[in-house]
Amino acid sequence: MTDILDHNWQISADAVANQVGNETVILHMGNGTYYGLDTIGTALWDGLKAGKTPIEVCDQIAAEYDVDRSTVLSDMREFLNALADQDLVSKSA
Image 1: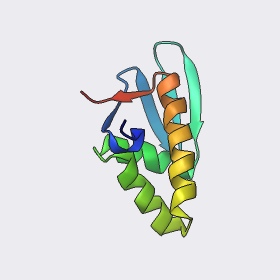
Image 2: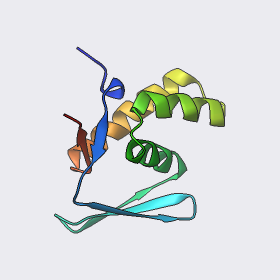
Image 3: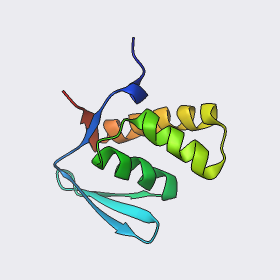
């Protein structure tokens, strides 16, 4: 079984995002729900939009914020699952 962080992910066509300062606000057009991403969440969102795998974004975050890599990986798995559960992202084919 492969790690979800190794997969390529795509942003849902129903997700409309706007950056506000260092944060991102997302509107899911399908259900009308707003979501807010902090600086770290925004880094993942931007990385996915740029075609990076989550593991690449994790490495970038760990280096940039001097955070333990295993902590970043664990948090990112949880966060990515939450985005997928809300139909904001899906695994690329």
